[in-house]
Amino acid sequence: MDHIHFSLLSLTILLLLQCTKTLAQTPAPAPAGPTNITKILEKAGQFTTLIRLFQITQVGDQINTQLNNSNQGLTLFAPPDNAFSTLAGGTLNSLSDQQKVALVQFHILPTFLSMSQFQTVSNPLRTQAGDSAAGAFPLNITTSGNQVNVSTGVDDATVANTIYTDNQLAVYQVDKVLLPFSMFGTPAPAAAPMSPKAAKKKSGADSPVAGGGDATAADSSDAVGRGMHGIVVIGVAIMATFYL
Image (cartoon, rainbow, N blue to C red; front, side):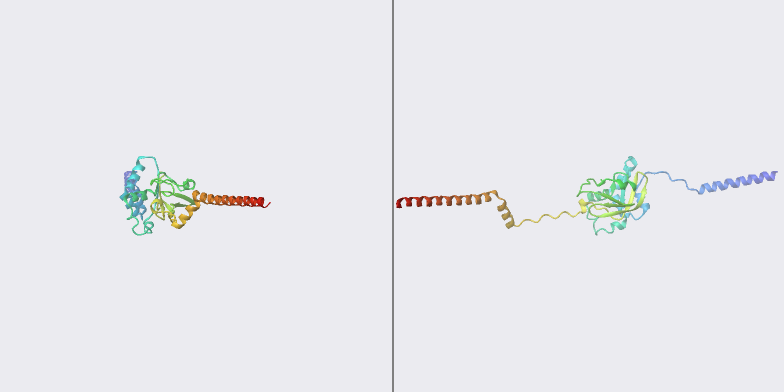
């Protein structure tokens, strides 16, 4: 009997030790921390240039503060490093600090948009860069099936995949850097100046004084002709009287 009790006790001890070992090997769930856009991009990889721009402009800190202190969502279009590498050499270095801020903010929508919501958005979309009017910071979305295209008036990008979404922040990888029209658009060519000769000719043709002068001269000539004709008729009549 004692032998049976000892066996049961030993078995119980072994089971407890095994359960303890198993629990010790299971990692504890990570605590829910504040949203950090930099960590999200670092985990995704290949966003070194964008992360550096976030740090230089401090837009990354602004995003984190906004997400963690308000219920207003955000949508980020994130170009990877190979998208930045296609820009002309020195493009980023040629921008002022204010322009770098505007460039980064142009990639951020002040609302959360899921992939399905792109189907029904109204263009142009307003970004955190500000004015969405033509010639400023317009951003237009077009869709074809499940494909989402983003147009700036300077270049057209395609949403490649979803990097992160939590119903408050959506991060989408795009295959190009979104270039604002106000910074990278080609201004319309100025009208060619009119030659002095053509301008003088046009001025003469359009001038009411010139037209009026010609008409007055013609009228005067007609009046003189009529007067001369009257004198001739009177002279002929007088001569006819004498001969009669």
